[in-house]
Structure formats: structure tokens, C-alpha cells
Image 1 (cartoon, rainbow, N blue to C red):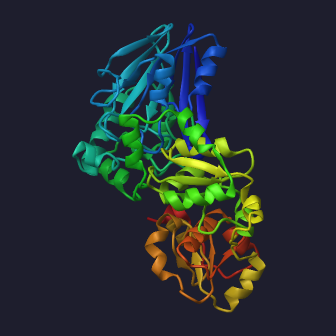
Image 2: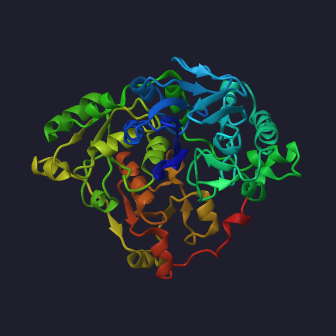
Image 3: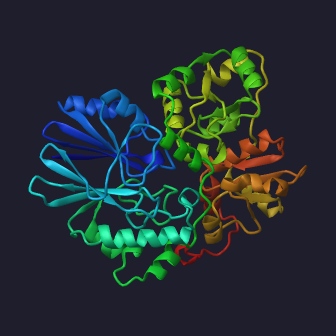
Length: 469
């Protein structure tokens, strides 16, 4: 028996490859399915099943494409109602895979179709659970995402999740391995551990939501407390996962079209496309196509695209590092952004050589910023509220990147102001958004709060984030 976790760090997402006696199953595959097919081929195995734990909100699954290319059925748990052909299993139904068995445990609460898959060995011993978003390491799935579809309040969904955990998962043996769909960094939970695999026994000890003496009322209160609004693209990803989507090869072919500067400019003007620049923030600062948005590939790329561009139907034109065009289109497609129209051939250098206008972002280092702070300049911190509350530059204004659009009116119209984040990535994203709105009187602080502290800039007393509510 082979169990392999295929973890994608930028999405904090775990897909799984299970194999026994030449038969394979995939749990929660990503959009690009070739790696799963190749793995099975290399092992001389045939993909027999595709298991989906629920209709995912934070990424587009590869289930439809993988089924089309392998002939393997897509399996959901009870109450699922996909628009495409799938096997909607019954609670307790079992599927044979070589010598092992995969049993359906209906565990509603995160969503009503949420299902955990229990893997049993050839002797019938419980080996592992693939828990989707029902049970994470250190947390459980947030119960507020499916309220509209389930016609239930988040409190009612949380109560349902409590029952699922107590009746289906906690009775399992402590040595059962837990394989969740997400780890730390995902917006699907609020308290996840950095580890991606654990035993159920350890989770019973470590996970606040699995306390043996916990009442349902306590569970509901603790699970629903402190939930931030979900990213706007989540419902759109659910729709794609439920109804189907364009083939990834078609998306890649369209998105990786090389466009000359003139063709790129025409496409931008005619389609209303967002120009998305995914290079390093330092390169963006030195020169970029005016009104383009920076979200660098070498950061939490896909989640930030989802949070800030939001509409998966938005046409996108790309400015990428050379050779990373296909990677960019692939990573956009993982969160449902399929309307990429092509990329700027030759990059900003070609754009500039063609005589077209180039914009820049003014920046200072931490030492220079300290001098400006002493002069009393306006400072805007685009980190998360929890980071800001823990420690921030004295007299700084909080304008979190996630909700930057809600704070546009707070930025000075003429006076030069300074923006920073923790390390420089998010503040450059913010700078690009502000400049696209016509706000150019800004200066970015390179190195962010990490460098700001090192040079002795006055900051507030540190408050441990775990003590904040």
C-alpha cells in the first residue's frame, strides 16, 4: 500500500495518491492533473477512483479533467449535487482499491456534503482518514462558508460539525493517521498547525475543537469566534467545482500567447484586462507598465490574486519573469482565474524599447524611513490587524491589504506618505493598487517592519498575538 501526500505550499493544500495492487485513487486533486497520471503510469498502476471531500472554495479541483482523461469516476459524499456525472456515495459505502478499502464517512458541518474517507488495510484495520476540511491539524473547517447553500446559520453548521466529529471521527483509534486538505496559511481555518500529517490521538490532545469535555455550545462559540470574512473568490470556486470548467490545456494555450508591446497595449485597451505583473517587487518598483497590479509569484500568489482581483471572469494580461509564463497561468487556474489572454513578450524592457511609458515606485530603506518618521510623516501599515495590534510604528495608520479598497479615502491626496508591510511584498502590492487608482504620492519602505525594527524606529510595546481576541 502506498499513501503519498502531494502538498502545494502556495495554496497550503494537500492532495493524496493512494495505491494498492496496481490500483490508485486520488483525493482532492489540483487543477493540473498530469503529475497524478504520470505517477500512476510510472508505478504501473491505473487510477480507479477520484475522491472529492467537498466542493472546495479556495481552489479549483482537477476532478473533472482527471476523470475525463482516465475514465475514473468522481466520488462525492451524501447530499452532493454536482452538475456533471459523478457517483454520490452513501454514508458507510465502501470502495475496494486493490487489497485495501476506502469507506465513506459523511461528516457535514464545514459544508453539508463534506465527507471524510477512512482507509482500511487488507485486514480491515483502520489506517488513515482523509478529512478534507472537516478536521485540520489544530483546527476544524470554518462553518460560515456554506450558509447560503445549506440555508443554515453558521451556528447551525457548527453544531452539525460538532456532531460529525463526535460520532464519526473521535471514536476512531488514536493511531489512525490524519491527512487533511489544508495546513497553516489556508483561509479555510484559523488556527492550523504548520505540520501537514499527524495521528488522531495527538489531535485529540492538541486540537481545541476535539476536547473530550467540550459541550456543543462551547464548540459553536469557539469555532465561530474570530472568523474573518472569506475571500470574495471563494463562492466562484465552489461554482466551478460544482458545475465544471474549461480544460486546463485550453487555458494554458490561450494564456501563454506571446504578445508584442503593441498587441499587448491593444489587448489591454480593448478587453479591459487587468495587467498583472508577477515579477519580484524590486523589479516592479524599478519599472512597470502604468496601472499594472503587482502580485509576485514568489509570495502567497494565488490567494492574493483571489482576494484582490476577486472576479474569476476578469480578463488578465501578464508581465512575468522570462520562462515562468506557463507556471503563472497554471497557478492562476488553480484558483479559477482562467481568462488569461497572453503575456508581454520581452517584458518591460521590450515595452520601454517600443517607446511606451513606464512607471516606477518610489522607495526608501529602513534607515531613511526612520529619519522621515522623526519628521512626522504619515505612515500606513498594510499588514493584518493581528500583526498591527501585536506591534507597530508609533502613530501609524492600519490599512490592511486585504481590505485596502475600504481605506482609499484615508490616504492623503497631496502630502507624501509612506507604506510598509512585514517584509516588502504586500506593501508593493498595495502601492500598485493605489497607483492604479491615481494615488502616486506614496513611498514604499523596502524590507518592511522587519528592517524598521532593526534600525530603532519607535514602535509600540509588543503584545503576544495569542493574547489578542
